[in-house]
Length: 171
Image (cartoon, rainbow, N blue to C red; front, side, top):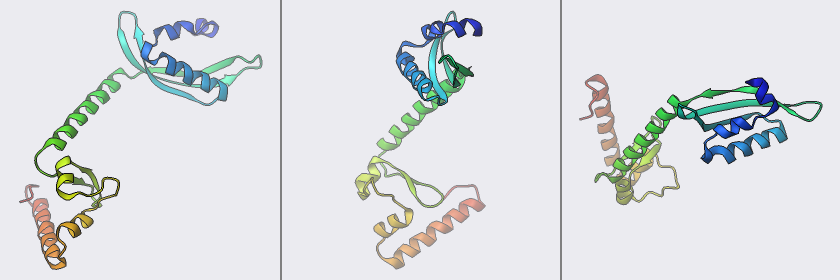
């Protein structure tokens, strides 16, 4: 109960997952020292229910006697966390598959800035990974002749417009 925890919070720490215990304890102590808001996502072991992910949030308030009074909540975020972990695993798998495909692949956003280049693309074009790559820069490198580059780019834009007007497929 809140009253029991007001006297002794140690039973709460007995529920923390062993792998998260020290991190959470350190975060709470730092928050108590600075009186900054504490927020943390961690695992707890609940009797008869197993491991759950929770999000803790609290504002510490120093009392006249030096004790710390915590105002906050702890919310179960297990379902959201499990979905997030599954999505992260799927993303890692897709990234691996895209990196291992035999063709060069470069993904760009609507402004033309590349945000993904697979291994084969790097092998073919040798663009430095630490420098931003735009489609315009790629086109200049791959098609150095301005006239031919304009012809290729015009063909690309026409294909995109055809896809927008039709079934969404670029011929």
